[in-house]
Amino acid sequence: MVPRTLAASKPMPSEPTYDKVPAHIVRPPYAKSGSPPSWETQIPILSKQEIEQMREASAIARDALQLGGSMVRPGITTAAIDAEIHRFIVKQNAYPSCLNYMGFPKSVCTSINNIIAHGIPDNRELMDGDMINIDVTVYKNGFHGDTSATFRAGTVDAAGEKLIQATTESLELAMQICGPGVPFSRIGESISSFAEPRGYSISTDLTGHGIGRNFHQNPLIYHHFNEEPGEMAEGMVFTIEPILCQGVAAGIQWPDGWTISTEDGGRSAQFEHTVVITSDGAEILTK
Image 1 (cartoon, helix red, strand yellow):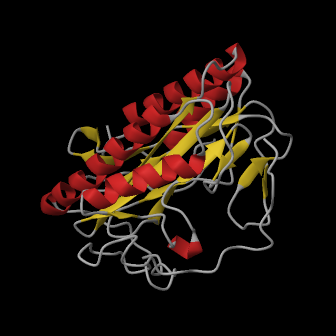
Image 2 (tube, one colour; image 1 turned 120 degrees about the horizontal axis):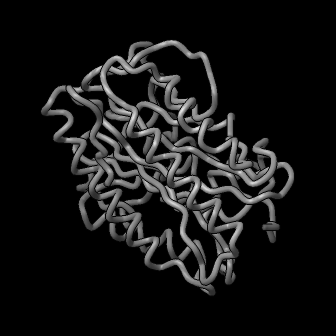
């Protein structure tokens, strides 16, 4: 994908107006300034009540993602998808977490073909054969829920289909190994052991993350082979969101300060869920 235009610099934070996000909707702390709170050193452990509060945000994010996916077709713009998802989230009396997070100007991320992550919705029309990742995060009840998936615009070629399928399977395998006492590094091990023998590279620049009262918090979840310390414990909540690439996974950030494309122009795919560690495994909150 080649951009029609490149912004000269990263957008400045801009608080959403009340006609865009009604005044009665509770906003996250960064909504006005664009500056998120500092990360806590410790990994938060959520109570059963807090996990119940996360369920609603996660369910809205899931439904918003399904809505966006249902709109994907040749000829539609990513701006139109963003606008419809925004309307849906606000109707649920929730806030689209991406909006003004560190100045991000839209409500969702839309990443097409060789865009690894953080694509800004615009007026480019999708073309037949495009692969598009839609990344949705929702803030409700003081908690965030985060999910994403890669969708097909029209007919995707065989290589693209294999990439999408491999990325889906890698996420499923990673979620299956989660549970109390499991090292976080097992996630990267499971994904790498599956993806690399099939010829795919894995983005090492972008990670999963803890999520809850903050959009991003500890722990960081690496999707490649790693030796990071730490183990999962009941009540931890985090995202797993592997990005598999057909070529080199190294990324280049565009001048807009957000969009990251593959260095060699190869396509990428990503799938993501928010999971909570339970007493005997893990539950997917965004499924």
